[in-house]
Each structure stands twice: as structure tokens, then as C-alpha cells.
Amino acid sequence: MTARLDYCWRFCATGMAFVVFGVCGMLFSVVVFPLAWVWPHRASRQFAVTSVIHWFFRALVAVLQRVGVMELEVSGMRALRADGPAIVVANHPTYLDVMVLLSLTPHACCVVKNAHWSNPCFWGIVRSAEYVSNADPAELVEAGAKQLAAGYTMIIFPEGSRSPAPNRLHAFSRGFAHMALKAGAPIVPVLMDCDPPAFTKQMRWYDVPARAFRIRVNVLEPLGVDQLAAHDTPPALAARSVTSAVEAHITQHLFDYGFFKTGN
Image 1: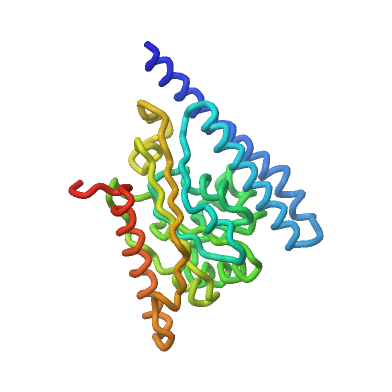
Image 2: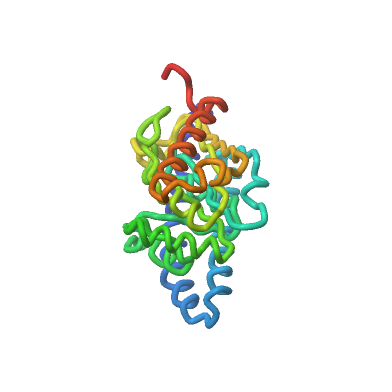
């Protein structure tokens, strides 16, 4: 009986969290977005908007933990808050990965799906925060390099979508590698895991697990692009080398840290 009540409570709390997120997203679009665009100074406007987003997601994560829906375990967070811009490259097991990383990273910019520019819950957020669309690869690299030059951390999920299954990743796209090579920014690999699985590609929001899910975030040491590609390598080959190296690095550590299970 107690387990059933606990499940019902988490089901209702999860639904309410999605409602709050959607309502806040739409309010952001119709209230904050117009106010942001009349702000006279673009740099301070973006700084203020990314601060609001960071603190909103910190509060939402705290509430989800407080009501018993999720647990959060983070190691190596220092690298997410180090001085200087960096490119955070993470695997993408759940729908909540973006929320968690934004809650941990002050003044971050994301690469997001082009569809979010017309989503009623996201369009104001992605525009006023000047997030980067993945619609055009060349523009993605240019826009990302500009954000890095402005001092923002870029958060990128190079799989492009949530991971297809446990112990499997989509092949990494090369946009982050071109961006790192262009800007000379370090790459911060991040491992993410959710146990039991929740909000995966195969699940709906109402597929609430039998117990509170734990999201684990393990931030690895930054990698310099000079470690991953020779200086005299043509840009296309250098990007391919960086992408392959980072994908192999993340995959190996997912097994090493037990996020992926051998033999499954």
C-alpha cells in the first residue's frame, strides 16, 4: 500500500512539474522575451536571460528532489564552472539532461533542435538566450564560436537526439569538433546516466518508474583539441579525428564508471 501511494504521489508530482515547466516556458515567451528585446544592451541582456534560465532550472531540479521524484548525483562539477569558455559534450539518455546541465552551468548556451524555435514552450527562451539552432551546420559552428568568444559555455549533445537504447549511443555529429577547432576552446566530456530509466526515447512522461530515478552526472577532465588532432591536419580531417576521439573517450568511460553494462 505504501509503495502504491508513493508511486501515485510521484506520478502526480511529475505531471505537475511538466505543467509548471510548460506554463513557465509560455510565460517566458510572452512576458520575458518581449522585455528582453527592448533591453538596450545585447550583451547584458543575454547575461541576464541566461542567469534567469540557470536559476529557474536550479529551482526546478531542487523541487523535483524535494518531492521525491528524482535524485541527483554530481561529480567533477568544478570543470563546469571553471574560468573561460568551454564546450560541454555529453551523452543524452533522458529528456531531462538539458535541464540538469543548465542548472549546473551558469551562463551557458545550448545547441538545440530547430523545431524548438516554433515550440510554444521554448521559442521565447531559445531566442532571448540566443541559443544555437542545429538547422545549418555551418551557421551552427559560426554561432557557437561567437558564443564562446563572448565567454559562454556551449552545451552540446552530439548524438542529436536521446540515445537509442541502454548501452548504445547515436554516432556523434562533428559540429562540436569544428567549433572547438575554430575557437580553440577545450572540450569537457560529461557522462550522464539515469537509473532506473526515465524520460528516454522509448518512454512517455507518464511512464514513471517504480522508485525515484537517480540522474548521475560525471564531469571528466577537459580535453584540448591539440591533444586530439595534429596541427597540420586539414580542418575536415581534424574534425573527424576530434569527433572520433571524444566519442571513444565518452563511450569507454561510460563502461568504466558503470553507466553502461558489459554484456548487455
